[in-house]
Length: 136
Image 1 (cartoon, helix red, strand yellow):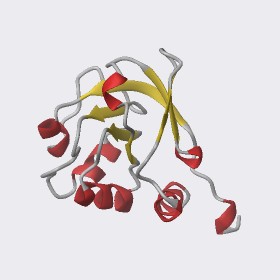
Image 2 (cartoon, one colour; image 1 turned 90 degrees about the vertical axis):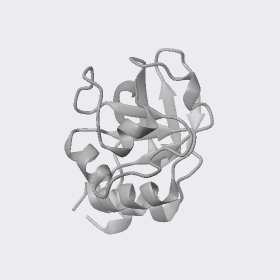
Image 3 (cartoon, helix red, strand yellow; image 1 turned 180 degrees about the horizontal axis):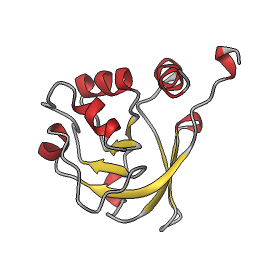
């Protein structure tokens, strides 16, 4: 398949809030199941341990969603193949909400509330990196 035809799959799962410190240390909530999403507040990932993004991905985290994402964590997440997306309305998401994240159309949909949120920190280059990681 030619590279330009690769796409990153939309993912569905539950949302789980984590404290910034827990995310930085790659600690996930006990309710978490593989394929779920971690939700965090501003500057998500700030001070993250080296390898935290890769560890979260290995634990089954489908994406990290936050009101803003620390630039160093964002770069590490992209390199690991973990979407770390910023949406203005992260605080509106509750633990346990069912979400659908579609980075190809820059959207997070909350199936519980019906709300749709625009992903504001991705561009074509970052999506290309995530595609490559998803389709080795």
